[in-house]
Each structure stands twice: as C-alpha cells, then as structure tokens.
Amino acid sequence: MGRLQLWLVVLAALSGIVAQEDLYRKVFVFRKDPSDAYVLLRAKLEQPLQNFTVCLRSYTDLTRPYSLFSYATKAQDNEILLFKPKPSEYRFYVGGKFVIFRVPEGHGDWEHVCASWESATGIAEFWLNGKPWPRKGLQRGYTVGVEAAILLGQEQDAFGGGFDVYNSFSGELADVYLWDVGLSPDKMRAAYQSLRLPPAILAWKSLSYEVKGDVVVKPRLREALGP
Ligand SMILES: *[C@@H]1O[C@H](CO)[C@@H](O)[C@H](O)[C@H]1NC(C)=O
Ligand SMILES: [Ca+2]
Image (cartoon, rainbow, N blue to C red; front, top):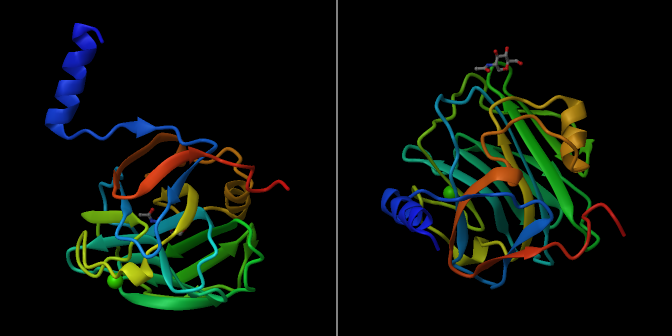
C-alpha cells in the first residue's frame, strides 16, 4: 500500500466514511435463523419525502414473519416498512399505518417487490415480480421524515434498534433501491428485469452499507430471472 492510499484509508476510518460498492451480480447472504444481524444502509436524503419507491429482491424459505426493509425515524419506527408476516401476505407501512397485499405463496424462487407511495393521493402501489397489485390508500397528506435508520434484515421498534430476532430475515437479498419519486410502470418493470434505472437515493450498483453481524456478500448463484 502506498503512502497516499494508506493516508486515504486512515482518513476514511477517522471520518467514518462507508465505502460505496457496486453489488451487481452479488447478494447479501443472511446466514443465521433466528438472527440479530443486519445491514445498515446510508442514503443521501435531504428533504422529507412526499413520494418514494422501494424495490428489492429476496430469496428465502422462511415461513415465519420477517422484515425486508425497515426505515425508522426517531418519531416513528415504522416510517417505511416492508414486512412479510406470512408467506401469503406483504405488509407495507408508511408513517406507522399499513396496507396488506395478499400474494400467492412463493414457489421457492426469488421474489421481486416494489412498493411506492404518493402523499398527495395517499396511493400505495405494490408490484410483485413485475406485476402491479390493486392499489390501496394509505396516509394521504403525510410526510416521511429524513433523519432515518435504514436497515435490511431486522425490524426496528426503536431508532436503529428494538429488534425481535423472530422477525429477522434469513436467506438472500439483492437489488435494493430507494427513490424519492413514484416510479412509472415502465421503470417498475425495468427494476424487476434488472434493466437501466433512474438515479436513486439508495442504489444497488453504488451502495453505501455497513454489515452488522453474520451477513456475507457473495456472488449470485444464478440470475434471478433465469432458470
Ligand atoms: C410527488 O408526486 C406528485 C405526483 O406525481 C407530484 O405532483 C409532486 O410534485 C411530487 N412531490 C415531490 C416533492 O416530488
Ligand atoms: Ca417496528
């Protein structure tokens, strides 16, 4: 390591900078069940959110409840939450309230979900494997706070904590994105197909994250869309 590189490493350590990484064709493997592990995500958020879209892909054989994406503020632990209480249901929370989307039980395959919300109308969209579900209404006029703890793998009941190991995720997670806009139907399908996507607050191809506990980054075993 050269002197300049060493200096940069020291500088990064001192300032707590978390490296950005392109996780293309990689996954987070959450190895334990139940688990206290999680991945902390760093987002570039400046303004409260009137609109957002969150997308991710998961692969698990869990049948108990688990959290997929947990965004908490100091005022509201379920500010944005994607939660799967059982194999036939997703819960989408905004500002502590939720709507339910009933889904067919998975067939042991990757599941891609996108959930979006628009304050002006309170419309919540839910897309599973590139297909939209009937839209629902949630928290019209609400604003999502920005000072947030954003976690994969655990469900927060307090800012950055308050975990229940029996709501933890175990399995593989990939393609995590958060946008401060509602994505168009074309972009929702593009997210499912892993095509080119608009710039995001959280993007899988330049993710700033910190692993806490037993989570490993590994190459994908196969393409999520392929055989
Ligand atoms: C949120 O979305 C609505 C509807 O698309 C739009 O009119 C509004 O300007 C957006 N708000 C922000 C802050 O982007
Ligand atoms: Ca909670």
